[in-house]
Length: 365
Image 1 (cartoon, rainbow, N blue to C red):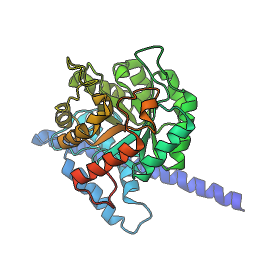
Image 2: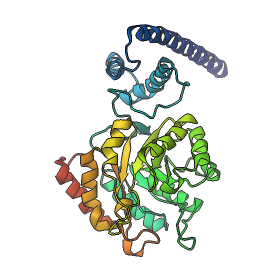
Image 3: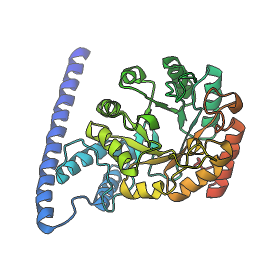
Image 4: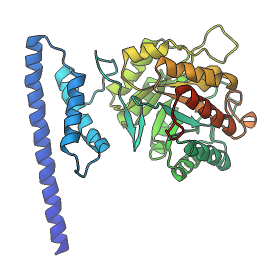
């Protein structure tokens, strides 16, 4: 009977699961032997070239098989990470924030989209806040038409002035998710407190921690334990070490996919909303292999500086940009001064393509 066959297949799969687990355990045991030998020889525990070669060998040997390269990497990446944790004496599953000598840039996989460690760089675009179905639909359509994969939009808005627009809350998230799904985009939105995490589950692909919450350690603990992809913004008054320690909180409590976002710091200058710390880009790239995005819109606080600051950020080594886009920026309910219109965003993309000498048929960036 078909039900008996189903039971047999499930039993066979359970057996395969156990065999896979046994093989991973054997691999970990071998890693322990390698650790002891490397310690005896005084060799570094992490060899990025060895890891790259292992991936290449796996992909090559599986050529023609049912798994794609991305799927092979998705399967073996956590196995390699756990093995390295044992090699380095860390807790299993605990992410390393600090870059090891020779370590390549890391990527975050969000569905079939990638963040970090890739050329061309990533663009995250969308309005400061979701205001209406018509507004977010217009922006989502434009973002997808230009070949991008990430749609940002605020639903919960922590504002300095309590009388300012605070966002549409969960209703805004549903509008954002629906628009993204219609156009095949990934959702990036800010979480402002632990109690929002459950409500945002399934609606957000990349959880943004805003500058005001970088040091909200209870939020970082809860978000880390939820093991959701996180985009952590630097506070406008934080040192780079404090920024990386906030990322350590996420990693310590279980986060596996963390990206950083430089968005400008507060200085004496008043011509701009904040001052883009361009030196932070190469410094952070030296200190960590985590993906690094630069939010040039908030750093500038004025739309006429978005393009030159974007060029500077990518020239300094950023993995991508965050750009705020609104159908009618002058009428925006928040951050009207620095949001680009859809037409201006298209011109921005065209100029960046020309600057980076990217072919017209290539996805930009």
